Image (tube, rainbow, N blue to C red):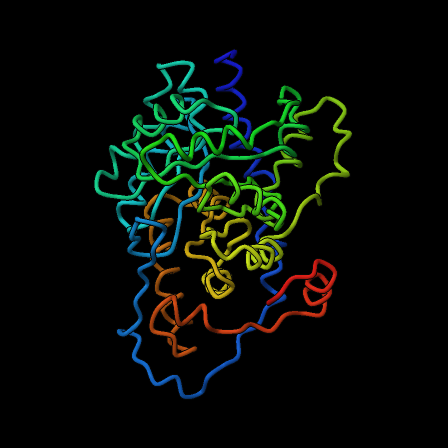
Length: 345
């Protein structure tokens, strides 16, 4: 691995994620509706936001999604994210630690996630195809509570220097069996289909991060880095976050994290009602950090938690189990998707 070039790419990704940031996401949450309840028979103080992800109890169902690490600049961002996670009680995921497995000098750009958040829940992160020993090394680096393995075929194929071989399933199964924490398989923005989810379940995976289309678009980012910028036609590739949640309904043994275009508490509430245990955001948080500051971003995320309580109060749902029992109205477009994919909802 050319470490200098890799670090430069991480800085490039950070800049391009902000360059292509869209304030209105296209993850289809606007095509879902709750039914208002005029007599909710609940007090806001009764609402409990705790959630469970396997053996992990999370105080709130929000995740600061994987972003970055590997360069001095991205190390500063991780220091901020660690402090924000500690202040908000949110789980935080590392960006890909692959570079730190190759170059020990970059480890310090990842460890602030734990150093600034000693009592919080931290997720390590590596790409598919690493060995069990490398996975455990990434976990140990952050004293992580769980490990994310990201799968990103579309990104790799568009990335000028990306991988071209994608035999990952057996390696994922070996890691699930071989490490000492829960393993979450994570898409990076192209969503997951029921076929993928069943394959993952067949090798022992219990937790998935759907990473749906509608948030940060890595085809757009990587295509911008190509000299000819000729692969823009793939910018709409994949399933949206909402479509991915509907797909995940067909494989109920998996616990789900929903990410991709979460821009506000109402998006989060809809994702949780559709079956997610946790919802995550990256682009919105990064945008806030860049355009404002750490304290403003912290306040925004605390407001999201209050906003989710407001919505759950409106619905008369005192906890996330009750929220999941709410049936959402689907737009004609989503109804058509479900019919064509033979999805039960």
